[in-house]
Length: 314
Image (cartoon, rainbow, N blue to C red; front, side, top):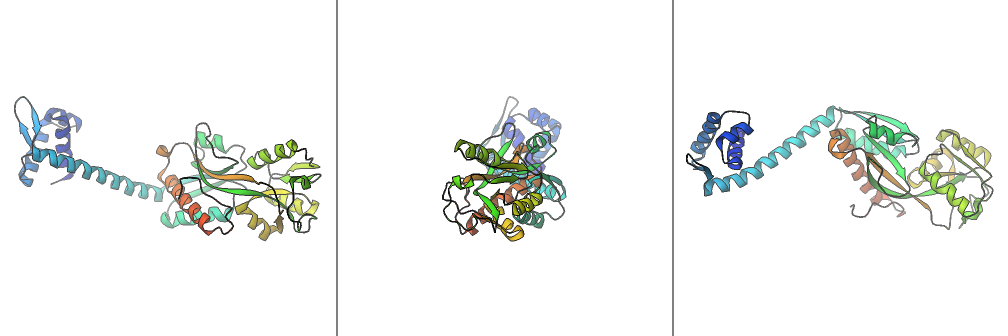
């Protein structure tokens, strides 16, 4: 019994016409008849009742058909899965990554992905949130990792939230507010605010919030890079923002500390963004799956309880 014989059988069972089945399989009616006769002889089953007027499944044929449809469906799924794995291991993937993404987080995701697909080539393109959505829509990026301050749709793109985390206000360790507890937002009055770029969603939430509360910042500066911002924050006693997963890196690498606030924080959603899952490269699908697994592990390991997964996620 061959796969082709089963394909011929299923085609005849669904068309109930040998000529129509032949047309469906791009072959001839005698060829289909030959395959069905061979299948019946090999299995010892009488699968069809055939007359000059019609073709009908026997009871045995109907039972065989139902089982074979299920089996061939599983077979196609198994073949597709194997092909996707092979294609993912051979493909080239372009990933958009925001500049303030915790690179240790992404390196963990990437390490797991490359363990599964060692031959896949991944190009990471740093983004400042200025053009990534257009690049995803145009196909310049296969997939992206970007923050939003709330989950939601983006026109023409699929946005899948990975986890939610608070955003902290951070200053140099020797700043006058660094050791104070239970600060209110009005403690920010007259402070200087610095950030790499003005398109980040944190900034779009934070600055209007300060203005609405009547809190005046002495100066707001956008410097175009994390390293430059950190240096100026330390030198000029300014303040910047950092999401929870990046705050520890800011502390360990740059000596910044988060202010102890007695206020509801700004919340940030880390998202995977892509154009259409059905047209995603197999490698991009695999990276998305690795990211979801990592997010689950991140939440489990977070002893602070600050990081949460979207509702309905494990």
